[in-house]
View (tube, rainbow, N blue to C red):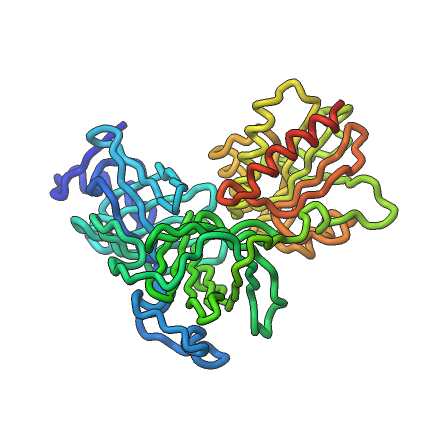
Length: 450
């Protein structure tokens, strides 16, 4: 039912609304109606508090290396979205990151009893996160909340209607054209983690910059930003991750920058132009322990039923075992890839099963996360709860593996259930590697099933 409430609620309607409120400070959740102006909006996640506090190890990271970013406000992660109406009362959001458009339809608007102001909740059900904001005319102000990171994980959020730029409206002449491949290293000068390699794939058109970073565990999504003089800015927001890259073009043409993931992770990175830049073969990163030819598993699904590799549904069939987390966008990309492959090849004696490692230790919450993932993606294969989101615990759950380096990891078994390939990470449609992997995967499975 489509319901549109005016800002002047009749007493009876207000009484009914109050009954439906779940608790003080909650909004009415059943009636969805139009309210946001259509068109482009500019959203900002405020990673830095208004009163900037130095980090425990010294000065804030950019200042430490003399990286000043005067074109933008420190700690602001911008993204763009469009409000699209399908009729007079029904609308959805489309979050824009480069070529990617993420459609979000789970939107609720109502009167917040605690503030007596119109409030909107934009849910990302697959990732168990949401944007909640008070809105007045052309402005929204609130927070982004990620439930599976704990009750305290939220980041202030603001948005303005009619603002089409991402980082800045400035048009400073770029100091260089960054288009091409770059050999990058993250976590440089870090005392907390070992440096790790990456390959940047960038495309620049004037001031406009798009691209991504490929790592050995997956890619950093569709990034979009700008080059202003010798400063570089890229960002991505997809409901699960909030990535902010800032860098300076050095005199020798290399890049030196800062990378933030939400408010919980921050590190330095460097990059040098290198069209031959490459990473370790993803089929060589995760291996079976000596003496093993196969794997074994026995885990419950959301329905409570335990599924094992010796189940009749798997007999005589090749099996793809996907290690994933429903909180992981790269896992989502891989799940959609596998879903499409199964739909294209119904004749193949092939099964897929997902082993989920979730960010909830409480089983009921973990099962709910899996249900949401299945309901939204409809992957066409079962997903079982294998454990908690911890790579060492994942290795214990599958002790025949030498280690678990990444979510996702794809283990391909032949029809006798011997391991033929283990593919670590997933470089999705934001990368140049995606098409090549798709073609190789198609050929590999065809040969496996001959």
